[in-house]
Length: 80
Image 1 (cartoon, helix red, strand yellow):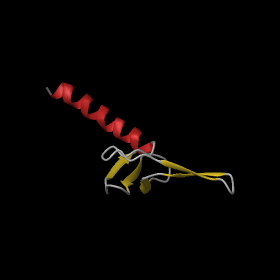
Image 2 (image 1 turned 45 degrees about the vertical axis):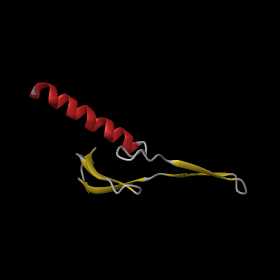
Image 3 (image 1 turned 30 degrees about the vertical axis):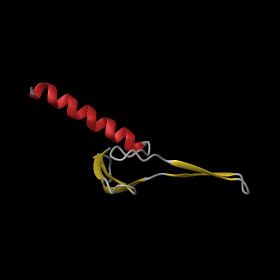
């Protein structure tokens, strides 16, 4: 059973990370919104997901990024 559980866990974790990188909250489903300013002819994008670098090594290696949602207060830390 453990043989099948580990790949399933990793697949779900990667899917959540992809959603977070695209600006979609995996918990509440909040999506990025776009606003168009007709006076200045500019498109504004707002994302409910905020990314913050927690730990970064100087010569490479893994970077820890904290993703947080403004709508549902979801907080997750992923390595990249």
